[in-house]
Image (cartoon, rainbow, N blue to C red; front, side):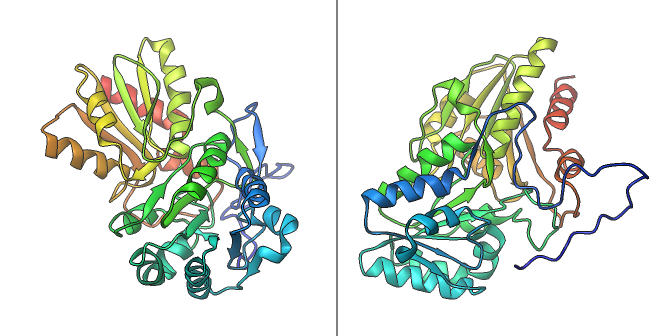
Length: 340
């Protein structure tokens, strides 16, 4: 295991119970249904139907939900140890032999440590490797060593690489099937453990490369991905009480971006356009959307909700989400301020 025990910066008061930890993986609001390990269970099921699927991990099977696959398909599971570059190279070799490798690690280790191997061994050759990574953005409290706040920025410039940022368990299950069908390299951010189910009530279906309008609204248009789609939906429901009508467009595929859907939504007059993402404000979905709008001459009022361009603190996730402006309460406060 890579991680040492997290020690809080300030001691608890006498009799106070600590109810969350720095390494908390589930971001489910209280009372929301969850599904356990949606990626691992979906991949294990697909592997029964597709003998070419294999799983690799860099000493993190339990923490990327690949242990579910390993238990059902031990002969097709490869534990590569703490060697992400070796894992990526092995995945490339398996793809060349006709297999469909799913390689898992933490997002920081894939994007920072294994970048050149992904670029040269996989993306340049358009190999059929799926890189699925836990702890994207601010989904761990272990500080900069484990918070992949800039992974999308790092990967967006890589040719041939598809980038997926799913919202919930349903999105992960459907996206896993879709990328298994897709021929070519994919990077997918992963929420692991007990993952909330929120998109089922919107009749949602994942389609590779497609954005989905989940709800309409006249005052604000949220364009969001990943965890922040969950939060913008919560914010939109709450803002209704203040007579603020919010649309929410979920963009699970960051690259290739669904520019047609984004432009069509952005051209509707009278709405503040807010891009919300669990990623640094630099180089992610927000700047991708801004670039599309600028190139096409579409100029709605534009704002971003994202993580700051800095190394973030360690601590409990609820505290950090409030501090860095990606909690539901922080989003609501920001929207009210912008609307005056």
